[in-house]
Length: 149
Image (cartoon, rainbow, N blue to C red; front, side):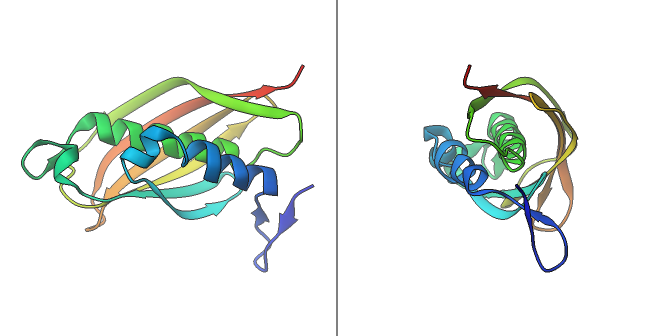
């Protein structure tokens, strides 16, 4: 059962928060990239990734693979934000599409919104912006939700 906040938005269940905090953001890759949760509502999540020399291709520009991982992880977190049931065991990305629109030279924020959800899948739009508000990438993530049999 979903609960709403004071503005009437659904808030994630305890299971959803555990999946986001422990599984998605607790994963080795998310930890290595220092991804952090900025905002979470049901089907609407934002993650941040700090600019770091370790993430660059050339000095001052974040590698596209790091941006892709941010998009993929934000999509996974958005998918997890709406799960509601003790039979959920995990999930996986089944499709990832990315358009790189500009150089990523600052800390990044990925805003992920689920645009379609069924019991077993989500389709999520992700917009990645720099600290100046400029969009540097857009992505679409399709995720599969796994259930105990």
